[in-house]
Image 1 (cartoon, rainbow, N blue to C red):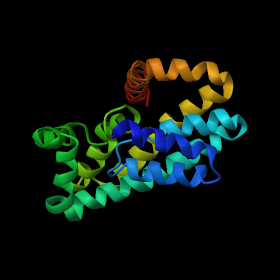
Image 2 (cartoon, helix red, strand yellow):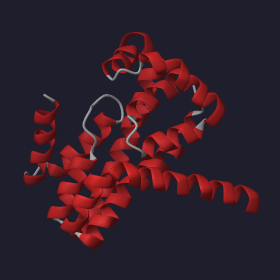
Image 3 (cartoon, rainbow, N blue to C red):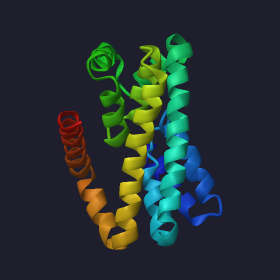
Image 4 (spheres, rainbow, N blue to C red):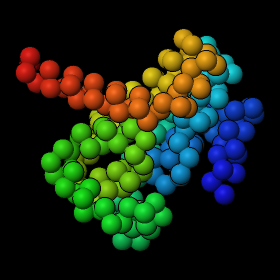
Length: 193
């Protein structure tokens, strides 16, 4: 079923509704949908490389707004809807662990989840449930989601089809490396500023 859903998402790249589908998938993936928008972002960017950054912006806006929706689910509907979404993705046993992450790392937990392949929706919903600072949540979401989508689009813009295979093969490794660089950058800024 998941493979069929993946192929359906990918098929939108060849329709006039591709941009709307990208926005809606980015929105939905941040709160409940299983397929990341990267799939459609890559397909659209390969088809129209000059619009790659526009597609990244659309993904970013849709994802952040979807994250806000996920936050609202956690804040207002955790008992009814939120737990069911966590259960669907097998994260109910790690729910209290997420609370510890938020207590210790706050924006870092959201930022890292927003950039890496960790299911972002789990962090948006739990951020609302644990009542983390909404402003911090939104800023961390904007930075992490934009970094993720603009990095993918920049690579496709510069390298085209060749980079698609590389991204598909090493996406997890690339996100870990970028996250480590991001953390290192924040530590450097903390000691310099």
